[in-house]
Image 1 (cartoon, rainbow, N blue to C red):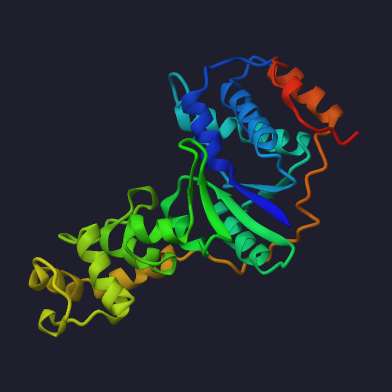
Image 2: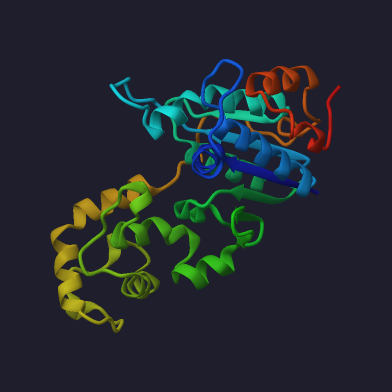
Length: 286
């Protein structure tokens, strides 16, 4: 039975940019994040004895050049082609987002693979809380590689007080800074979880607090602000739902990792001007 890893490559690239030392490659361009990305992907492949894997990237648009030193966004965007080259050199399936979001690619992949009887577990590697909505029992889980914490359905319920399917409702009420959701004034995690446990969704919470049969502090004020912003909150919820129906070719055989491609790795490390990671690559395709 296969364990399939689906990796949030955009997060990994940003993490490496802010965590790895700056460095120049053979051409003189900044490659520090790319070096770190190669190292962390090799670590994932080696430590977890990965057999099936895909890595998804958002399309990062680098800002226009301006006077002065390049911004962090510009330096990260400039290294995105190298990030894609790293994935290809390692022989890993690459899912470029194009007009979709990487989160939706990961959600689609997880949903499809969870239906495959040959898949024992799907591990989504990310720190993005809204992907907790994809968790299903212990079959589809989220792995925070920084803290080495695995989130299954029991942990979602313990951490957020709601089911995975209710995560979009929760963040529509309390907000999610990482996705630009402001939430509603006064609504906190405890009050939102208590109300959602009773009524299921933001769309079915009664307008009048007197109709609530769940004890929540400040219920009158919370009901008033929800009533005033109901349409906006329902829209936030809908936009927070990760799509699992993208036209993405997903199969266990397509995601099988057969090893790194030596010629491409040689070209890559020459460009990065750093071959320190090569010896740790656990498998070669040729």
